[in-house]
Every structure is written in structure tokens, then in C-alpha cells.
Length: 284
Image 1: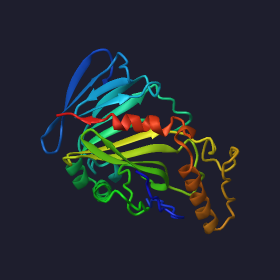
Image 2: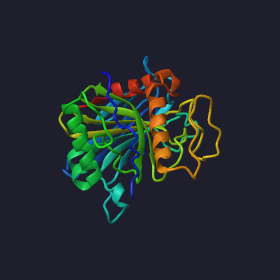
Image 3: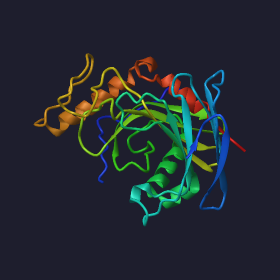
Image 4: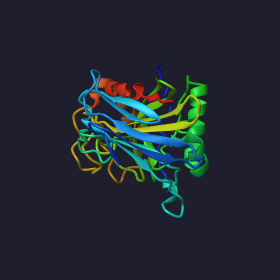
């Protein structure tokens, strides 16, 4: 399904374990509702289509070559007394992909599974993101705007750009993926900050899934230093003396550049990252 992305020139800035191996282990995660999610992770042998990871309540397959294994870890409750306001969350599951080439990215590849109702109540940004996801899944034809896309609740930053927006279904739910960069200041879009983001909900509304997977573009500089070389076909960052409209134009042009790139022009390819998300299944 083709997406209609209408972010325009809007720049969004915020104001602001269990190791997978040859065996299997289980650790209970006690949610706020006293429901139990069992974090069991099994892997070792590479399945024909990749590496299968079971970390209840989800199962997924790591596509061949994307990572070598994974680590499934239950994360305890974070309250305003024990963490920053943006980190507040109920007990949840974190699956970290190991052996994933970061290519200079400062984002760790991971899939997180939250109990959606509890997260929405505990964290206002999570509540807003769940609301936006539900609205998009109810009306999947868009348009997608800066005010309609879900956010990452635990990032103390805002979404600077979003391109390649696409709906994805998995076994037991659906959601939205895009290629994004978050920022707390006005700085270049770069391969150190770019990543593939998926946010989805299980069909029964019980689980909120977030996947953060670094990817790079051949058109972007390696880091957020304004003096870093811009590859051929890229767009130079405006000088510090430029007007606000010049910076807005820059973000719009970068968004359009990434929007028109093919899947294989990203590394890892978007199709590969889509395959991981599509392999997710909610376990009974």
C-alpha cells in the first residue's frame, strides 16, 4: 500500500538478560496488571530463513546476515521516582540484536514489547503514540503528517524527519514503519542518527511493539558535524548564519531524497528490515 507522506517543511523538535544461545531459559515478567509475560529466548542453529528468536509473547526471525544472535531481557518497572519522566514504563521485554553492523550508528538495534494499556497510562507520550497508531490503523490511507505519526515515548528528543512511511502487518497485529532521525537541536541528518522505526499494536490491543534498527543512506554524511563531507547526491547543511526557512528547506529536501530512494539504497535494505517485522508473531 503506497503511503502519502505530508510532513512538508515541518521540523519536529522536542523541548525538552537472557542470552540467546543453544539452550533456553525462562524469566517471568510481572506486569502492572499482574499478567505474566514469559521471556524465554531460544536460538543457536540458524533456521532456513534466518535465526528464530522466541521471547514470549512474541516470536521473530532475524533475516540471514542481519545479526548473529539476540539477547532477550526483562526490563523492570520504571517510575518517576526511579527514572526520568520520558523513561517511565511498566515491566517490558527488550530484545537486542547482536552482531548487527552499526556502521557508526549510536542507536542499538532492538525490539521492545510493552503491555500497551499500562504503558499508555504510565507515560503520556506512550498514550499519545498508542492513540495515533490506533487512528492510523483505523484509517490506513493517510495522509501521514507530523501531528499524526506515533512517537518514541522514551526518546528525550523530537522526530526531525520521517520518510518511507509504510504499513506492515505481522501475525497477530500491524503497525507503521518509517526511516527517521530524532534530534534535540537543529543539526544535519546523518548516518549516525538515521534508523528504521516500526511501531505496532497487537490485534487484541495488549501489546505495543517498537523496533529500532539502524540503517544508512549513501547520500548522508557519517555524523552530525556540519563540516563533515556530504557524499555525491547529498544535500549540504545550511551555514549557521542561514535563515530559519533555509533549515526548513533542508529538512524537506532530505526527506524527499530519502523518500525517493530504493530499498536497496539503504544498508541494511528496507526490505530486509521489513522481513524481520513481518516475521513477528504474537504467541498464545
